[in-house]
Length: 225
Length: 232
Image: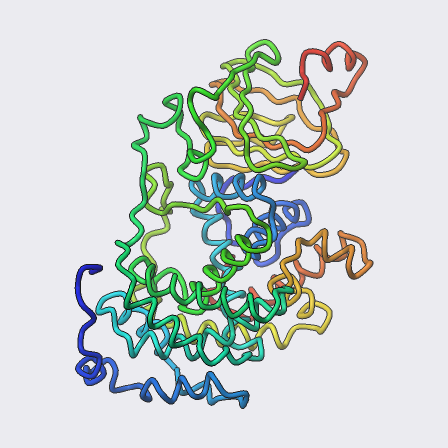
């Protein structure tokens, strides 16, 4: 895959798979503007765009992903306390990693946004904490696999809907729980850090998060961490 | 005490699992120290259940990035710069350099994330108690101590407590903690706070990855004697 030249993106865009989507420029413009873009623009497409990057080194698909995700990754990093300049750089690095690692993306395991979140999170750890992050190698011969069987074949197709359902369910949580979740993800803080910052006992942080997770489990069918 | 034995899908997690859950959550969020991250990554290699949990927590991060934050426009030159990088990008896809299981340090079944920290020649096994050997692993720096611990069949670790967190991942074999909980290969055992636990007993012997924070305090009247031997 790596040795191939990028294919003609125009041809790709005429593939049946892409006829569903609004042209990349629209997504790009939407992502670059401050106005809330209609979420339907990218509906059912981020996972496909990522696969197009993986399989065909498709630059139009990558441009669309960049337009949508780079400003969000930058926002995520800035909320973690990264200054704007450095957030630009790290968001760029994140998107270049998306290009390079797209081949290892597996839509049956994660939504595109989840996969991009993990890359951005790891860049943030590198940059702010200056240590590497031990990660599972899913091709490790020692990996113990589930005996639950393979996920249903349509699981990947539901990923983006699942993502929107999760976002909605987080918004519907009691404010103190939703705030705690956002802080944990966006501010790079352990539960002990959060307890200290909010000046509440660690047990309270843990129980609020547990209540939140229990509620999300009830709300979201198929989300069972 | 928290065990990961079994992979039961529960609507509501009992209180006792909250320390374990918190560890997986903090790992997914990206807030854990390197040493604790290593413990979680080793555990996840051996536990599909833990991988599913972490993936679920990561999905929250994906949802928050996609819908939960106000996009901040990139500087205008960024896109062009990135596209130019793609032109220059000739790196082959990052092929993992993976050790065959039998070629891993000491011939031990060490999950891949652990191999990066263990050099065979640096594994200095020291006897701690009858039947127990341990070797330190340099996993980042900071307040945690990470060790590989070999416990011979039919061996016992006395009741003890810690001043901080203690995390054990079973890499081979199994042990019993106290009267009830049994930890098997892949399980993670998390203790926080002051409560004493043990005695541990292993019939078949086991190899564990152990993280401790602060020295162990043996409990009981023979504490002083054990303390010299244990040095946990």
